[in-house]
Length: 197
Image (cartoon, rainbow, N blue to C red):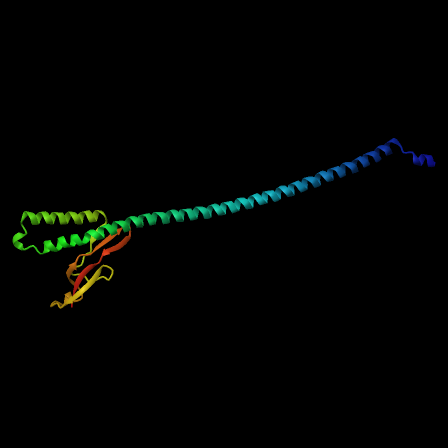
């Protein structure tokens, strides 16, 4: 009977082999699953790292683009400002000659107003003013207005009889000019004026 116990039937042997094979296969499958899980974890970590790099790169790109746009605007403004400043510097040197021309025309007597020379000088003066207007430079209006500290420089005060003229500009001693373009306003020379008192 003991001999029979030691001997297994073919079915039992097959069952034991299947069980052993199943255990071995399960161990092999578990090892495969473990390897796959590790690979998935590694890939997920790599994916997360790539996403972080992409986010940082996008953030850096946005900052770089913002800085570049700001720099470009500053350069354009500096270029525009340099152009305006050089224009004003040149015009400022010519304005005293224009003022002398205006004063000369103002001092011509009635008898000589119709002379061809006077008309020619007057045409040259008007042409100068139109050329300045094309460069966005205009004469500052003064007469009969209240002085504006930005545009006018009072040089004297004179008594006036009319009460409505008190505190107003009654004479333009020297004409002023202002540059005005695209919302930018720069006084080249303030108007020197005499104010009624």
